[in-house]
Length: 441
Image (cartoon, rainbow, N blue to C red; front, side, top):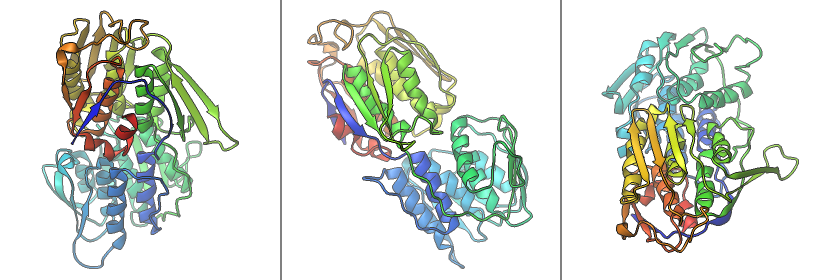
């Protein structure tokens, strides 16, 4: 399915969907606690639905036979439920969609095998079969994605009484997501950053964890905040088109790493205003807009690689040079996001002599020698058509929800009167933000 985006000023008040990262942690811990799987939301993304379905299977715990879990295209669901399944003394087989087939669980599977769990896979990818019990021990777990470590941290406390799991972490990307996981374990009384308790301890830099088994999870009682990873797209659409977005449901004090995006917007010259709507500590509203030209800069995305697609788009409309660095793990998401954004932005700005995009092993260097005066916010004639040589241009979302939505925002950054941009694979946006493209149109 393709979507056609015609550039126009985007002004909107948006209720941001629930955080996918929080919701999946909530669901998996609820399943392990034997609680009902309830997430209250006006709509649920494909990834959340995949997690609900996987957790329902995990909760059945049939005494005989093999369980089969379809993780859809949700990497977080796959990795988290693999570790959870390792607690069972019966085989569990994992399948999934086309994108999941290309994502390796190899380091996680190797660590589980080191703890006595039987593992079979197709070179680290699905189909994967796991069979416990969890025997404990000391393993090394390099984490190109933090999801491997979060999966282990959630499962290990439920290993049998007397079991000790020690995890060395020689590489850890996306540290904010580990803090998020630990916040859930803290609410279970299993972890404290200020007190060295007997259940879960870790080094300050998260390079070593010791987890004692024999614990039981209590019902999860915490509200799920809005999703910063989704909020970046309506915010970017507004500032790129010269409009204004008011976003509801985000908590600036939450553990989500992608909240740093709003600091990046301010650094690039946007106006970002946070306002508490009521006495509720999580009831906030943020307003974003832009009066002048976007400015480039250097942005280290190691903790937040999901921001790379939208930051690449902002860089393409910013004056000067924008460097997105330290994000090699952005290549192992739903697609190689570094290569995808470099290729699609070069298509969009073909013939624009002022635009350069250089692909690096760990990111992108985007240069704007001169901004077209027609871009919104540059003070030129917004009726001037840029990119006229690319009439009828079609971009490819590469089956990646964040690439697809970032390219839609890029189309919004062209001046009104420019040609519409068609984006292939638009259905991918439903993975995390169903309804976004319809709202943008």
